[in-house]
Every structure is written in structure tokens, then in C-alpha cells.
Length: 138
Image (tube, rainbow, N blue to C red):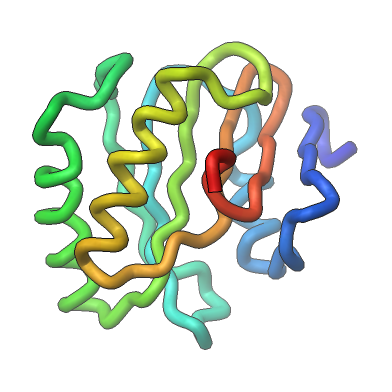
């Protein structure tokens, strides 16, 4: 138990760094549907840069990966970031929904296209934050 909410991490989750832990604690339980993208460098202990995408549609549009590629390319080039970690904030339980998985596929495709590694995947849900080593479909 962390604070007033639960943070769940499965046994296959890699070591969660202090920066990861601080970010998870800052997130807390979901308030509304939105997507956060956290960009980091291998030696970045400060947490990198985080962007928030609110008014997230339930399902990604057919060109969602292209839109994400534009954002990821700009940040990867400007900040020399090597990893992107998505956070899905939405009400409900900790298990990924079909819609979560659709977004995960779009984010994974965009990250792969830009040459970014996919880091820790988080779902901020009604009762806390759930950490995954990678997106649940592998």
C-alpha cells in the first residue's frame, strides 16, 4: 500500500526506479480519461519530460500512430530521449481493457517507428496505479 491508494506491480515488472516511484505516487488514482507520455534517457534520474494528452477518445483513430509519431519524433530529437513510458488514466479496474490495448498498440507502433524503447507501462485506475513491464500483449 502506498499512501491512500494501491500500487500493484506484477512479479515480471522490472526494477522500479526512484524516479518511477515518484512519478507513480504523483499520479495516484484516475480522475479522468487521459494519456500521459513520459520520455526519459538511460541516465536520467530526474524523471525526464512528461506530456499530458487530455480529451482522449475511447479508441485511437486510424491515424493516431501518425499523430503520436509527430510528437515522439520532436521530443526524441530535441531532448535526445531514448524511452517512452505511457500512462493510461481512466476510471475502472487495473486490468487493461480492449480500448487500452488498442491505444497500447498505437503507442508501441509509434515508438518503434521513431526508435524509442517502450518503458514501463502504467494504468492509473479508480483505486491506484498498475505497473506493467511492457504493454500486456508483449
